[in-house]
Image 1 (cartoon, rainbow, N blue to C red):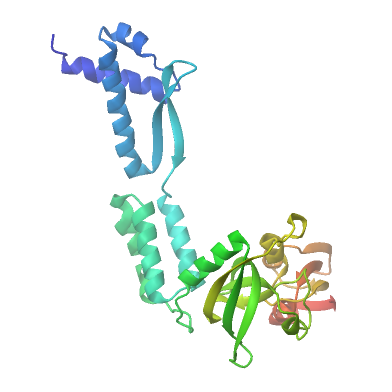
Image 2 (tube, helix red, strand yellow; image 1 turned 60 degrees about the horizontal axis):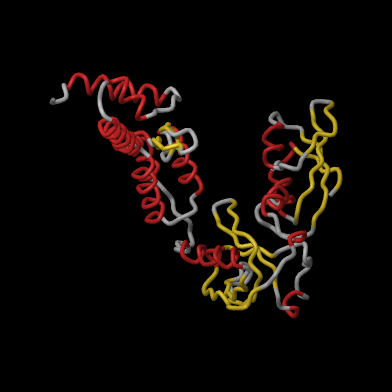
Length: 318
C-alpha cells in the first residue's frame, strides 16, 4: 500500500518534535505508533539528519541524531556552534581593524575569509557594509612586512621546544644581529606581534642590563629577517615554564626588564582605565579625590605609561 504523503509529514514532525524536546526515539515503538515498519522510521530519521546538516550551514548549529546503544534509541545531540553571530563577527572585525597588525592586503584577506566562513550568506553583505569605510581608510603598519608564515614557524618551534636561529634588525641602530634562542611565546601589543625568548649565547647575555632565566627578551616579529628552526631541542621544567598570561599582566609596551613594584597616586576621573591597563594594580586608598595604587610590573615600559598620564599621576615609588 502506498504511503499517504500527509501521514509521512505528520510522522516526521512528530519524531522531530520528540527529538528536540529530549525524548529517546525507539524505532520499534515509533513503527507500532504510526502503523509502519521500522525501515520507514529509519528513513524518517535519515531525513531529519539531512535537515539538521543543511540547517547547520545556515545558522551554525550542528545537531546530530545519534544512536544510544545503552538506551537502544536515537537522541538529539548538539555538538557545537560553528558560526559566530553577526554581532560577534562585527566585533572581531572592528578589533582586527583597530589593531593595524597586518598589511592592507593581509587585513582585507583575513576579514573576507572571516566573514565568508562565520556569517550566514544572507547577512554577509550587511557585515561587509558596516566595516567597508574602515577597510577603505585602513592604514597599514609602516614596516609593510608580511610575517604570518614566520610567526607560524615560530609557533611550531615553541610547541616542539626547538631552538631557533634568527637574523634580527635591532631598533636602536638598525644593525642585523644573529641570535640563537629558546622561543617560549608569541604575544601582541600596540600594533605589533612579538616573540618572547631566552637567549642561549652567554657572550650576548652579558651585554644585557637585566637578563636571567626569569626574564625573557622580546623581539618584534616584523624585524626578523631570517628564521631557522633547528633540530636541537631544549627542555624547560614544568615548574619553570614561561606563562605569557602572567607576563602579559605585568609588561607595558613590550619593554622587558626586571620585575618591580610601583606605587603612584591617580588623580584622573576614570580609575577603571588604569586598572584595565595594569591588571596587577590594586587600589590601596581613596582620598582627596584621588586613588593610591600599587602594581607589579616588568621592565621600563611602565615609566612611559606613567609619563603619558601627565598631571593625572604622581609617582610615589618605583
